[in-house]
Image 1 (cartoon, rainbow, N blue to C red):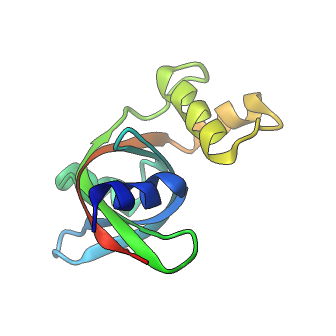
Image 2 (tube, rainbow, N blue to C red):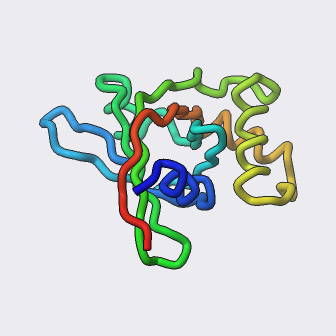
Length: 139
């Protein structure tokens, strides 16, 4: 399977299942909305969630995306980088969260001030990973 074809599945989607590694070595799975471009995957999460704790301990991450027609899948693997936690309504993390929202949703939020407050209150951060390995099967 060509990497170009597998990457096209990742880049075409915006919903995937992320796997991180729990302390006992078993996978921890989470569905995420994401943006992928230039072999970089980004998604938003809350600092208190298991995937963040797992990634702080072991940065390895995998994400499975089902092909748009449902006949196939691609898995992207890499090492995660965690942004700082959003702490101010106008900090760089909140600005990037807005960019990711716009890209994934393809629309404007009805109340950006409320969105900014929610990102800070939720303790949001951004997980970024450069894809260093792809595998899967596409029909």
